[in-house]
Image (cartoon, rainbow, N blue to C red; front, side, top):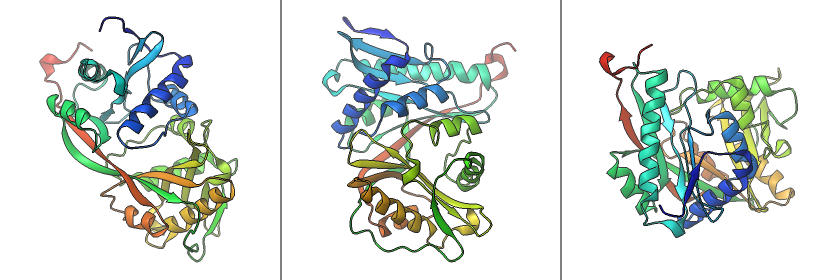
Length: 322
């Protein structure tokens, strides 16, 4: 790779990493989505070893590629590999070398902590990124799930009243533990869900620097119990907000609650000066989420694909000594 230098991650890299990954997203037809705060929260809570589990590549002090191997949470089963190569540096074999390293590093981590279990490695990209798709197939990954990045204007929001008996309120302090419990319950039946511990999850959401509590919503029962929630965040674009999580607990599904919360969020975002709001959704969500989001004005902007590769359990002879 000649004049490229490679090292792990340090906290000061967060602005450069966010800018790099946003350039890659723009290249495939998306929009900038990563904030510096989000990068820091992600690295502080998901990536265990910033030296061994990260490869940051620089040329003349500027980032040209980034790759990480986050360790799954306790009881998890899946590596979600992240990273990419600056579009101006394509065609030099950098992506191939980084993905090869990520796969080998994932195998090392799995062998050390759960050699007796079947795991998977997942990677994702936009369906417009032919280079990434070709690379994933070369490494034995196959498509298993599809996703939509959706966007809605904050004007002309359809009327979507809250279901009877539920009140939609802003997010206030003192609800973190209840919110975490509601999230675990709401997502327990979602595809590929890996439950993170309370502190890591809170660090990624309501305690992250880009969280917008005044533009997030809780749906409460008459007894003050959380029935659903929408968590909203800033984005690198000042007129665009991002909904990171939408959850409705099973007893309150199919009543229009998600639509009511999102309509309230869209209206509030418009009043706060945001012009559009984005969110991501499983295209095959069993909750019918796509139709719900379309009801309040969201439309598909970009389609994503998850590719997977199996990691069968190691035979007893191949396992490292305990």
